[in-house]
Image (cartoon, rainbow, N blue to C red; front, top):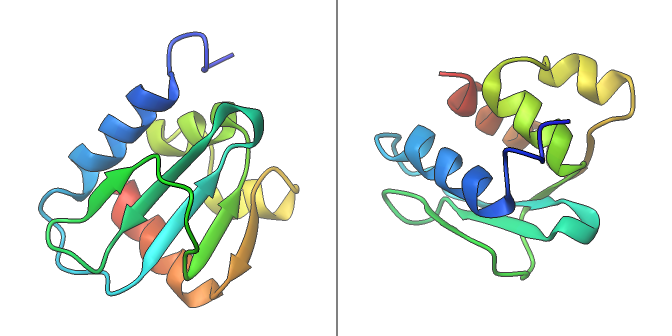
Length: 105
């Protein structure tokens, strides 16, 4: 679906673009994309540093690269993705909501 056009590198670049003017988030987020890899958002730095480093994070999102692409493009509502099981969250739900609102802008 979307991964044909959105590689992990493309997704990482899109996240960097969306977060480049945001204030410090104060926490680290990780998107675990299964076999496609990991995207880490280090929100303890300003601007946030986005990498493919697989380290511990305060909040981890588990989804496919297709789901992440749909979320970032606005084609998938984060709440519906969570409710339907396409998006799982480990860690603080408050942090998850904070990031979701930043990525939607």
